[in-house]
Image (tube, rainbow, N blue to C red; front, side):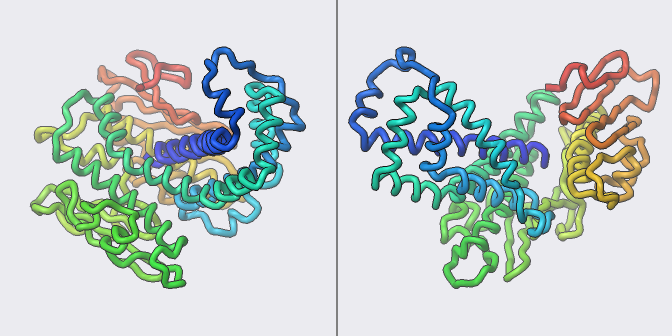
Length: 409
């Protein structure tokens, strides 16, 4: 699930880059009669390409968007990866990293813009109006990135429901959809709490978290329904201070067998069945979330549980490598299931290598890894699965699958 979030965050960043170009080009056309005239032409009639590399670099410079893009992406990454210390972000991305991005953008611009178009764009951004637009765009780029991330969070429940339907068929009961939506709401709260604090949204000149849902609603960071404290059949209760906060969600009706959720300062959504969740409760991941879903009184089948476990492994392998969880000062992947369990990234049962009727075998190195899941019963007709470094779960109904086998979806 974290992998999916990260992927959506990356897409949001890409949409932002494109959006900046559209916004600035659109503003330029408003001010430039020639631009307005060009809008009447059919796109297919316009010449493309031919702009010089030097002029494109000049254009990117006068737009002033690169530095703001860098700041916005870092701000977004900090929210998605709250466990990484601020010191890690110093000097990241490096100047060389930014140059590599610029080089890629230059190639795209030179392929699609003519020299006349680039020259006209540069001329506009050197006017007082153009400079004003560039400056304003630079100032609110972080807000655009935050809005993109918040949007990504709000559509997660829909994505998760679609994902489960694709894997298990269209049978999704309303109660389960509610729990998916609750998880999405808590992730939204994690995002907006960071915005509230870092942006001093209460205007008290102090970097502190919101102390209630009503406070987040009053500054426009969440909708009125969630701000009321009751949504998706759950009651939400938020508390916060200067450095810490948490929000619990419990079923409005109560009752045994219903999951209770919580998200704390670390941004991890956790759950427990039948009682109030705490900041030390088990973390939500696709494996345990799907395991604890009931469908007409029965548990999700073992195949789907195995798929969920492999997705969990894909997510924690990234954490293991980027966080140097084994402490050897080298960025490499875990080489066994046990190694992931030893550093607390997966539970002991999965760490033993056998869970939900499947045997899991993981291998890894500095740049590559894969994990195979085969039925514990060799006579079983259940499918076999594998997940590789690309994060795609693949399957086979016969031989053991490899990294080229058919994907799940």
